[in-house]
Length: 124
Image 1: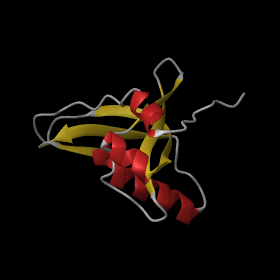
Image 2: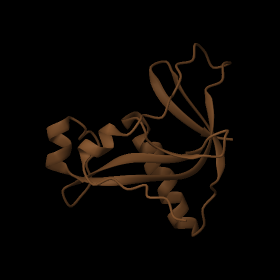
Image 3: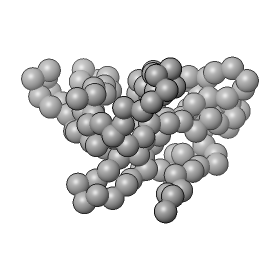
Image 4: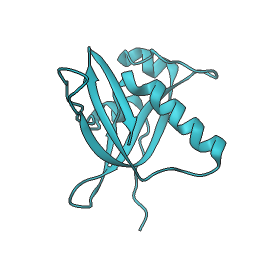
């Protein structure tokens, strides 16, 4: 059975649950570790992004990428989340690497956190 992890507009992206990303006090602390199955984007119309104030990373052809992620919970359930816009560049780089390599390195455990007011993601 194929899961339907689709969104059609910025409003639907905003309604997705945000991936819980903890704020950590220092570099010796650990963030949240998720079993990531897939990283992707919803390519939204730039005018829709501006309408909702999520247009900080526009790309050509009048679109802006809004990052998404599918993780596997401890119970084995697949969950679809929106990623914080602060992880947009990480998501973009990750998708580009997968496309360049021609193969996915997911599933993979990834640590997410907020350190010094900046979101980070680190593949483990």
